[in-house]
Amino acid sequence: MSNNVKISMDRVYRTRDGQEVRIYAVDGGGKYPIHGAIKVDEENFWAMGSWKKTGKYAVEFETKEDLIEVKPRHKRTVWINLYPNGKSSAWEDKRDADILRGSGAIACIKVELDFEEGEGL
Image 1 (cartoon, rainbow, N blue to C red):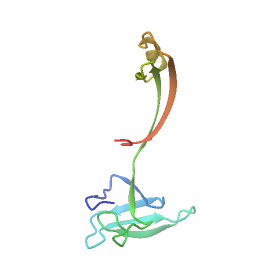
Image 2 (image 1 turned 120 degrees about the horizontal axis):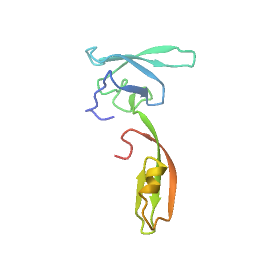
Image 3 (image 1 turned 45 degrees about the vertical axis):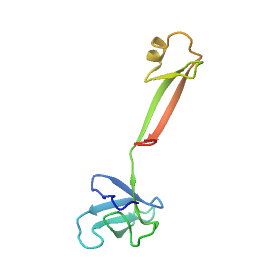
Image 4 (image 1 turned 180 degrees about the vertical axis):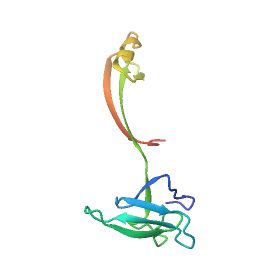
């Protein structure tokens, strides 16, 4: 995690090892101004935690308790017209893919997308 990361109340976080995190305050002051809790078991037990403003738990190297932002996931279905020259065109529904295909297409495939916001950018 870089030093320019700023933890925010309007984002969702997990620990580096995947535990759910609740953030209660980002302005606690001192060396560890981020206050919250880590869900430590399936019975809904939450352990208190404090982090540096960069999301680091205690030390300068990575720990399993460091905060990692959870980006929203999106699901989408698209229809892709494929052409022999390597070109393609994607459409939100099959009807548009069929209407706008033109001649020469070699396939029209349905693709189910499931991706994290910002993935590949």
